[in-house]
Each structure stands twice: as C-alpha cells, then as structure tokens.
Image 1 (tube, rainbow, N blue to C red):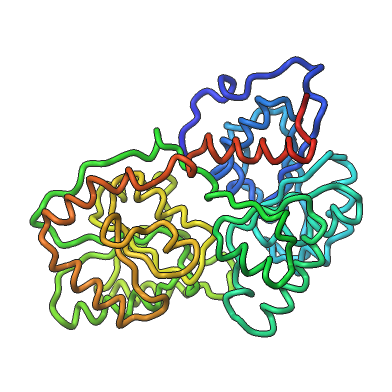
Image 2 (image 1 turned 90 degrees about the vertical axis):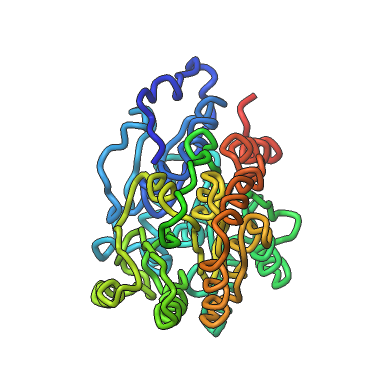
Length: 395
C-alpha cells in the first residue's frame, strides 16, 4: 500500500457549507477500498462530498491511518465468520437495507461482485442510485454453465436500472450488453482502479548471469491459472532449463478455487516455485525479477500487470480479458493461450533462452506502454465526471 505519512495534507476539510452531498462507498473489505481507491476517496473529499464506507463485518482489519475520523465505517454482519459471498449478502439483505437507510446517501459507489449485486438490489428497493464497478466477473462467470446464466440474470435484475455501471475491460462490457444484462448507454469503461506513477516507477533491471526470475503476484487460486503455470514449469525443469519462479500473495480465504497449502508446499518442495507470501509493498519483488507472469483465466484489468509495467518489467500473460488488454506482443511482453500449459511452456522456454540484451531493451521501454488514462488522477477524474453527468456533484 502506498505510504501516506500525513493524511491531513490530503484530506483537507472544506467549509461546512460545501459538504452537502453524501456518498456511500461499498466493497468486500476496508483493505480493498484503502489499497485500491484511496486516491478516489481523496478526490471525492476534495470535491466536497460527505463520505461513508460500508464493508462486511468479517473483514474488520483495524483502523487505517489514511482515513480521517470524519469518514465513518459501517460493518455488515454475516451469518458466518469472514463470509462475504454475494448469495450470503443477499440473504442478509434486510440488514444491508437498514444500514443504507441509516446513512441516507444520495448515491452509492460499490466495488467487487460480492457487494455489487446485493447493494444494487438494496439501492433499487430504497430508490437510491447505485453505480457498481465490476473489478472482474468472478467465479460464477468463468464456469460458463448454468451458474453463469443464473448469475447473469441476477445481474440484470440488479444492474439494469443503475444510472451507470463501470467495467474495467471491453470484453466484460460486451458480455453484459449483448445479453441485455446492462443497457449499452449506461456502460462506462474505466481502465482499472488507478496506478500511482510516483510510487510504481522504473526499477533497475537485475544483472545478467542469474537464472531468469519470474514473479507471480496474486491470490493462490486455480482461477489465477497457477495449475497451468506449474505444469509448464515442470516441463521446463524436465528439460534442464534454469529458472526461478516466485509466488507472492495470500493463500486461503474461502474462494472455491483456493489452492490448499499442502499443494503449494509440495510445489515448493519439488523445486518449481518459491513461496514468498503476501507483501504489502511489492516493489522490491518487482525490482528483483526479470519478468512478471499473469496466467489468470479472467481479470477486470490486471493490477499486477500494471504495477510491473510501471516498474519496467516485461510481461508473460494469458490471452484472458483484462490481461491481454495490457500486453503489446514482443514490445512489452508476450501472450500465451489461456489455460494451455503447452503454449506457456513453449513461450517460457523461448524467453529463458533469449539474450539478456533483448530482455534489457524490452524492460527499458515497458513503462512508456502504460497510458496516462490508467493513472490515479485520470481514474478519479472519470468517476467525478460521471457523478456530474447524473447530477450528483456538489455545485
């Protein structure tokens, strides 16, 4: 998380008369809001909005010093500890409605699918406009079966009357508008959560003479493509090709495709990966790697790829939506067919044998391929412009 040594310098308090509008921001954890959208909170605060936050009670994580005391945090209780699935939250809908009715916001900004659907349904019930942001379609949609169709129907009921729905890639927009789950004139493309280009900036490339170090940043889940990655690494090892692959991120958490710790430990014991755990600051890991790999089956817009590009690291990515969007073949990285271990193995073998000078040359130009439209300022500005369009911006 980017440091914020003096939050009072960012959250300057406007005059009381200007703070007449209220927004409720909702996500599946307080960490998510602060980690990804602190810049948006700052922009909304500076624009004169009164803000409040709502997260599931199972996600209590202590006080974040970046948030001023004037921004209250409300917690939604669940039946089970740390439960946060959208079906569970729909079951607790009456509590969600009661909290929103207590806050009385003029509008709600919601993030993550787990909260978008129940919050949009609650907002529709209360007559409060909800602007959801789809940061990824999630488990149900990647299954491509009856669950995906049912999830889509529920999304149509929840989102169809939202004044705007934010999507992080064009493939997700097509998925929802072609099926009439979201009205086309209400879909807005927002290029990720935003990247702080002063925090993530080019790092010196590792020196030659060391094994190619490949870094994965993300949760330890099957939907992130880790089984495909490990199978390809196993083939590389069989060929006697030297490499190091670091896996950095949370393990566990209740996702249906969580990879058991015993499996992760077995991969490490086999010499295929090094488990480095979760790191709040991933810049040292990016500085120490030659390449970042993103084998995911689907993303909103891959934050790990954006961070790696900003730090000057070439990318190996699947062709999945939200990943391939950021990669320019042979300019800032390479693509392989999603979930195709043979395709990835062939690509990794080629990259491990590339001259160091070629990787160094590519690394020098990757930061320039990350557009300004994906920076914090541009993302915050887009949300403010949309609020103004629907007449929810302070005068």
